[in-house]
Length: 149
Ligand code: ADP
Ligand code: MG
Image 1 (tube, rainbow, N blue to C red):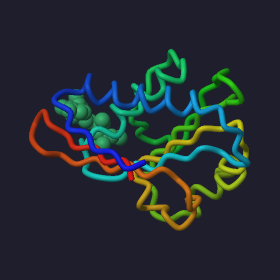
Image 2 (image 1 turned 120 degrees about the vertical axis):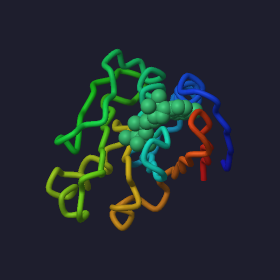
Image 3 (image 1 turned 90 degrees about the vertical axis):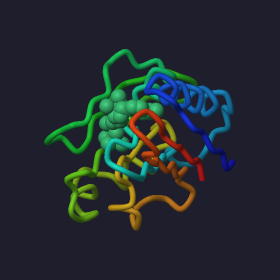
Image 4 (image 1 turned 180 degrees about the horizontal axis):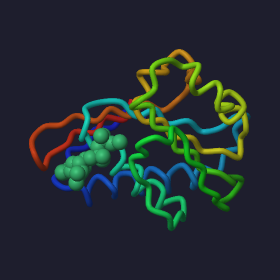
């Protein structure tokens, strides 16, 4: 499902996130583990902005932020089989063990979870092989390239 987007402002990036969330919900195919998104790419590339739109698409009202000291946040959802959205931000993570200590393996094993991991390249070894990888590239002040791999 390779796709490319060029967004011209943060609203457009949020919209791409919202549409992806809606597509995931629409498929309604029960899987045997969590749906995992790995977000990689430049600082300021739009990963958190994208997840704000993604969370909205999941029906989450809370604002998604860049956690300064928190690596993980959980949001409750109630959409089809899905009950939780987990937002991991690995900007400050030095080794995958820090995620394993937060029960990462269990979280990604539960089909009712949707899990998004920012700076996923720092923990690539512990991501499931079928994780959806999204790459964010800073083109200029207002332009971002988003590649769904
Ligand atoms: P990351 O999480 O990848 O470090 P953020 O989403 O936190 O990036 O930051 C992106 C910044 O760039 C925000 O301040 C946002 O307002 C700005 N921005 C400008 N143009 C865009 C765009 N097209 N898409 C996303 N963010 C944009
Ligand atoms: Mg971020």
